[in-house]
Amino acid sequence: MSPDMLFNLLLKALGQTLQMVAVAGLIGALIGLPIGVFLATSGKGELFPAPVTNRIIGAIVNAARSTPFIILVVAIIPFTRLVTGTSIGTYAAIVPLTVATIPFVARLAEAAIREVDKGLIEAARAMGATPLQIVFKVLLAEAKPGLTLALTLTLVSLVGYSAMVGAVGGGGLGDLGIRYGYQRFMPDVMLAVVVVLIVLVQAIQSLGDALARRFDKRNRKT
Image 1 (spheres, rainbow, N blue to C red):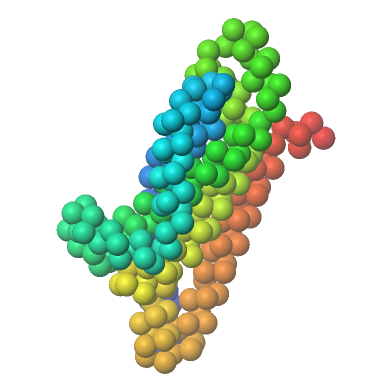
Image 2: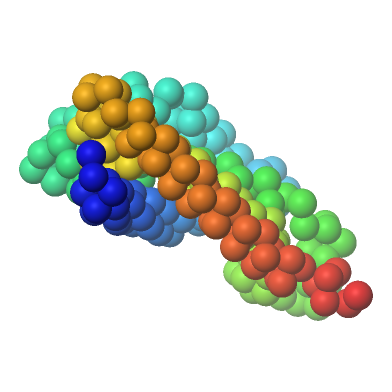
């Protein structure tokens, strides 16, 4: 394969991967973050006490997280077809990626919020802050570095998942590596795909770490 052809194939596949990761990450965060906030604040004696609902939603989140991704892709093919009209291609791959992202973000967000100092919550309560004010002005504000790292981990995981959906015709870098690198015995294509994936993951991780350090109040004080 000529360098120009390889470059064009890599560029197209990279664009598809970025599209899958960006859309699934955005939708997954928009849905998963509120679920994580609810899980972190709805236990007994917390801001929004609803322990029964908390346990039910927690069980659903755990069940979704424990399902291997490749099995999830196959299991929700009817739902994918209902949403996109097909089960093959980049747009179809976004559906299982998003479904897998929601519980992942929810648990990471819950963990980040639970790390906020309980004393800050009690201080806000003592000053008459409402539960919603505590969530937005205390919990989310203080958990911003942890949430940033959580979303960074989510995007890195999505890059790996997006490569995995290439095995079922999802498009992107994984599909390119399988169709050319594996099925057509082109090790140069496989190597190029691996290098691009490594660079992409490193770029996402570096950007996420930089943002987390910027949001961390302890770093701003030093």
